[in-house]
Length: 176
Image (cartoon, rainbow, N blue to C red; front, top):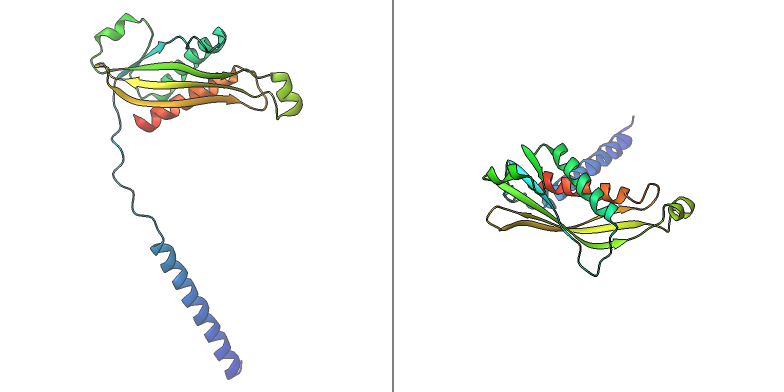
């Protein structure tokens, strides 16, 4: 390799190395601030899931309400965040000092069509929305969130209730 080639190679290497250094320095400079202290997680040893009636102007089939209630209980048990998951009306919940109550209030329902979904995959989506409220024993609202369950493509209409229950469980995992 002659002298000119060595100079060209070494100067190319120097340009690439300095460019990489600038890229690394720039990416370090552009980093967002370190995360602040995480929000305090809630804690409880037990949760009671209440069934609530929908508002008078909202017509939700009873099978959707029952399926939502049952799926939420199953998903809450799977999180293993609570020692006990109580149903509405369970008298054993009265003895638990740090009991949290979960209210599921339906807020919207869109009836879909499984047949339309299977034929078009665009139309026929089913969705169901609930206001999910976690309340402590004193009545203080600890967390309130609007969650929506959907089934857009394939699956039965009641699959939307399973989707909603998974989102409730994710909310519990994130906050407890």
